[in-house]
Length: 123
Image 1 (cartoon, helix red, strand yellow):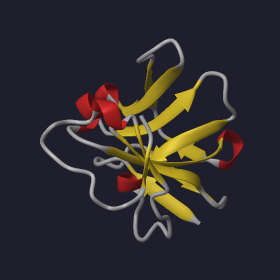
Image 2 (cartoon, one colour):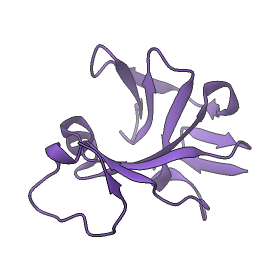
Image 3 (spheres, one colour):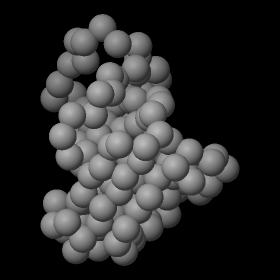
């Protein structure tokens, strides 16, 4: 079981499913929301139990982002046409058991760091 919270604890989430697709997102939107890189993994939406009042922000025509309305933590990313939901690995309480599989949107990454871990990079 993986479980996590936002910074203030108003939102909690948990899943018994094995997360898939662990990635580091370097897109401009994730950079602006996180201040750098957003690490996430995803599960089927019905496998993620979320408690608390998530504020959903339609950041684009293809997806929405789930935030805590109190502390502002960026916790979730959900594509409109997919049955999965991504959750922030940094919000998980304790070890995740997850390894990063890929870096995405690397063409948009900030110029203040290098990607040097040898993991697959996708534009």
